[in-house]
Amino acid sequence: MLKTVMIAGLHVFDSGKTWFTLGLASHARSLGLKVRVYKPVAGHSLWYSPRTFRKSLKIGLLVGNDVSIYYDNKLMESPLLGNPIAIATAPPDPAIYGENIERYLADSDGVYTSVVISRITDCSAEVARHYLYTSNLNKSSPALRRLVKKLAEALRAEEGSVSELSSYMESAESERNIETCLNKIAVGGELIFVESFNDAVSPCISLLKHLDALVIVAPGRAFVYLNGDDVRQTVLRLIEEKGWESLRSKYVVSSLKPQIALNISLTPRPQITKAHKKLIDILLGT
Image 1 (tube, rainbow, N blue to C red):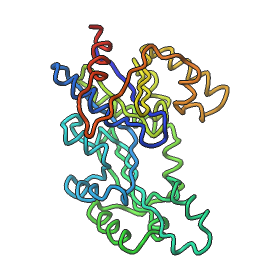
Image 2: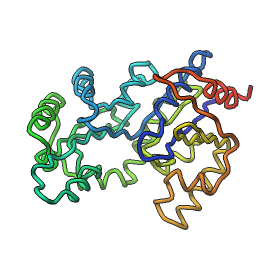
Image 3: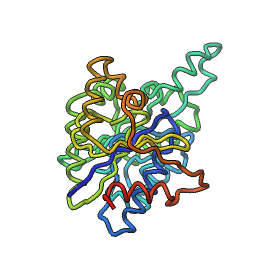
Image 4: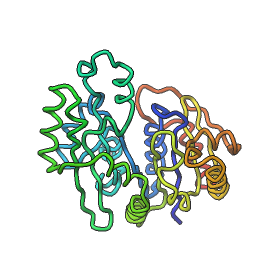
């Protein structure tokens, strides 16, 4: 029977979701299980991840570091379905803002004010389309603009609208598409790890009905919730009370006690640790 485990972060950035997921999936695979890793929505900065230029050109799809790690470790058959929404950002050039540094910092931190290229996979047709956001790209440095334009040309990106991207991300169509990809990559699997986006418990509401267990990761600690129904009911109740902000992991941690709190070791590179082995044993009921 397929078991779906959501991996979420307690922090917006650098919670450690990818490394923790990699260790779990690698250990489960070493036990002979048919493992899948799914990252519905992935965002990365091209400035801080220059290697993704080469990787995206090589495979003909926009991909970030996290997805590349799963793909290179053969835990994701293809980013086309394993990561249906990919968003690449680029920091703007501070020189064009003059003295308005607050605006520069705000634009740098906002996804929709810094996105320069994206990929949306139609999961039913298994076809990807790339989009270039020229209005944001024109705010970046000349060197970065040249690289992004080269990438966009190679990926045959069409001109995109930031407002349309924002609308799509919040749409029922996006949720259906993400669920379609999940159903496709889950075929034949026994254990699927779904890495969420930033500090959201789930990248979309529709995936909550597939949830068997939730792991919320923070530096040094992983909170494990083994009852998917409890998590689902808690999140839906919080949304009714507080709105969509309640999808953030901190609200679940504040409202629902985890069954287990695992210690996460500090390691110089991704590797299988005691925490990964213990959690897989628990998930398998051994």
